[in-house]
Length: 283
Image (cartoon, rainbow, N blue to C red):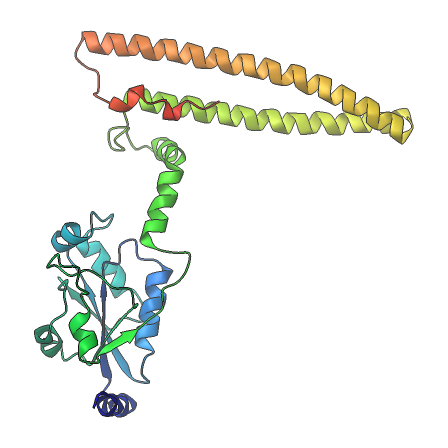
């Protein structure tokens, strides 16, 4: 019976009346993985009208968690996707017969992973659609997801904070305390210093090699002497940089402690438990 119904829909899709396919989701931080899944849904039939449902903030935060983008922003992103014909805001978490009938939906397209419904019983939100043979599977794109993007941001959190501070955002807008801002700037400064030291080491090595060639020393003799010279120079240079970095760090820590004491005395200190977290102390 289901095969006969599908044949009828296929015939419908080949004619002027398109097959109405529905896809739904959160679509937070809309990316090419989302777009590819919608492309698959759009190309299920020769003539497809793709409706895309987007859950609102209230239901999404309740059943899945906080989003980066608001529901209005997520809907707007979908409207700019070339594969989408119509966006349905405030989409239901669980698809019912009434919803399918209301929007005259022939098929629902989604990946095959089960999604828990709103009952808390662990049932699949697409259970009804699958039971009536109206479910069409799409494939997820490996290596990209909203969670992956968020994890990348968290991983490089310090760099993004500094970048946005440099762009003019205040530490309060970024949720960063006075102490944490100073620590981040200190660590980024030391990192840049280390990079400069490394480049300087490479330059010195090249210059020593050039001197050896001019002096006309035997290759084996020159390699031995150059290695010894470079090793000695780098040892002294790194020791000096380490002492300088330690001195800078100690100086900044003294200033931070003084600032903390002053702020506590005048009740101006920002509460921040992370002050006692050594996460941002890097050598």
